[in-house]
Length: 428
Ligand code: S3P
Image 1 (cartoon, rainbow, N blue to C red):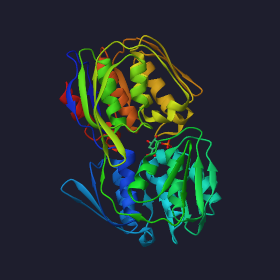
Image 2 (cartoon, helix red, strand yellow):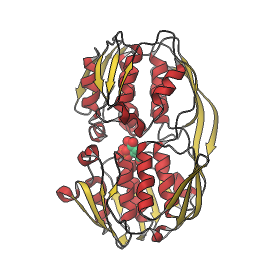
Image 3 (cartoon, rainbow, N blue to C red):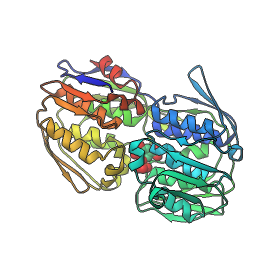
Image 4 (cartoon, protein in one colour):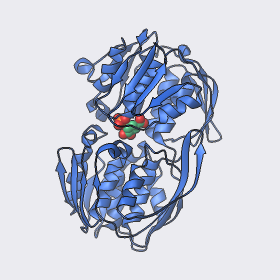
């Protein structure tokens, strides 16, 4: 169990950083290339624990994947070439792996068992097993398919129109992946749009996908053709550096090659609404995904309210935003964010309880939190609870607290940002 002590930065954070590849896009690149026909090359792939779990599952399903000069090479032979795994597929800590892979496996003529770590064992799976069953899939799991281990015996699927009660890209993507091999057309309708990397990347692999407001449709029977993917930097990782610069006086930080897909940029909108000095430059595209450089300069911020359609556009950034709000003038309210309770940890509880212990004025609400700032933070002992984003949020507190912040179980950070502390140190 690793422990890191973070102490106050007095001379600002300054410099230019290129954050690691986007986690959501890295997972999809490996999965889609694995079910495509031909050889695909992936550059900028995130070598974090979660995406490495995806690679190892796809290898167990018979796909040849190798690393060459910082590229991941995937040799796909079409979805039908995937073979029955000899043993259990272990997704580690990765919700994206288990949910998307379930969609792929539901239509293939063999059986598989999927498990993960203690956190995965507590996360809801009915949100994917339910709609997959509606498509005629044979899927089960503990408590009637609500939890892992999941058991899947693939078979012929039928297209559906699924109206999802939650805005979840994992649910949407799982259904769309199953739909590729189902009879007829499948449509997924969400209450708000979730991240759309699946829709964009399927197009890159030659699949035709129709998007109409909050609905996405595709026709079954479409094959994927190999493609080369350049993965943008992860805005969810960049968010921790943006918030660091926004709370540490005398900072100016530039982050290069960051994905700015509009379904992910809620954090930029929030920073702007709070009065941050932020500049987006050099906008361009990596395939279907927009990227840019982002520069932020320290300035005193004001509180804001975060609710409704913006929530899925910044759901992973809320731990960082909670720290930011402790330093802003006024009352920041985060609502409509019940989904935080079913992430790697219950992020409302883990953030509120730990920020309070460091002196923040913060309360949990039924669907989010309320934070009154600015409040000076003090040192203390905190932990990641095995959740990468909680570990990084706690490190942000250490940068501005009057005493040292000691964080336990920092190894969890390797799930999405293996060189996070190196990058922070480079900026000091
Ligand atoms: C992800 C979607 C989000 C996000 C997760 C990655 C994805 O989850 O929180 O970190 O890659 O599709 P939900 O779709 O369950 O909201």
